[in-house]
Length: 91
Image 1 (cartoon, rainbow, N blue to C red):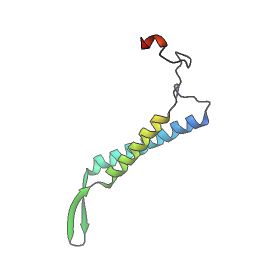
Image 2 (tube, rainbow, N blue to C red):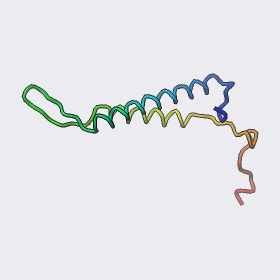
Image 3 (cartoon, one colour):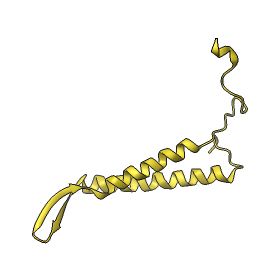
Image 4 (cartoon, rainbow, N blue to C red):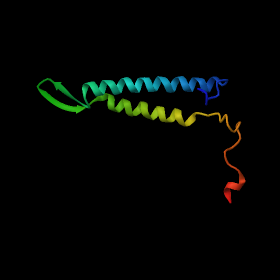
């Protein structure tokens, strides 16, 4: 939180959403690890193996995590908000 603008409610909410998504992803990961990546499905007389349904959901949550990460606006304490580059870097 030291790199995020804590005076902005939007940025604080983003961090909260990000942490919630991480928590959800880790729960799903533990479940898949415990149950395995494939599951047996019994349908009347048929039995077949298919991928764990949480794998698809994990992919969706991961995409949400990545999107939230892209929207973070970090504060650079060292440069006091000034860019880390100058015109001399172009030469």
